[in-house]
Image (cartoon, rainbow, N blue to C red; front, side):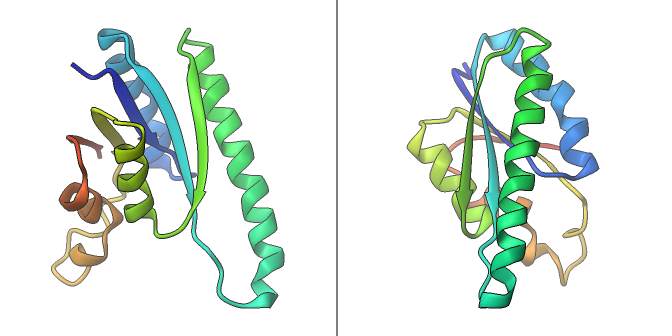
Length: 135
C-alpha cells in the first residue's frame, strides 16, 4: 500500500514526535523511507553565512534522523533540497513516486489568517499522494 514514504524532517518538536508514527507505518508496510529536509533560500549576501551554517545544521539533522531509524532496523535515503518547503515537499514526492507524505504539524496555521500560509495546508492541497499529519 505505502511502498515509498516521504518524511519531511525539520528541527521541531512535532517532527521528532512523528518519528514513532513513521517507524510504525514503514515497518507495517515494509516501505522504503525517504527523509527530506528543506532549506529556505536567503535573499541577501549578508545572510549567505547563515545559509552555510543552516546547511550544516540540516545535514546533522538528517544524519541524526537516519541514525534514529537505523537503530530500529529501518534503512533510509536522505535528501536535502532548497526552496519553498511546501512546493519542494510535493515536487520530491512526485519525483520519487511517494505513496505517502508524513509530516509533523505545529498547529500554527489553524487560525483563519494563518491557514493559507501553513506549509502543512499547502502540502495537503498540492500533494500528489495522501498526507499523514502528526499533531
